[in-house]
Image: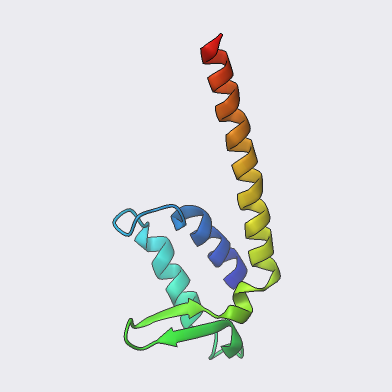
Length: 93
């Protein structure tokens, strides 16, 4: 479940400024992270008392889901680049 929520939150919020963040996704992500320790996965989360926030741990950031997110980002980059170059070429002709 954490993988799905993390991936969804990444897709929705990773390019947003703090004022644009979709808080319902971020709140769900925080909620799921808050239960990791209780359900036996303390190595997946870090809690920062000063921020009163949970963060994905370094171990979790190195997991398979983050490789899939990196692959997704790479694919999206090349798709967008191809589209923008095609638009430019059409506009020039």
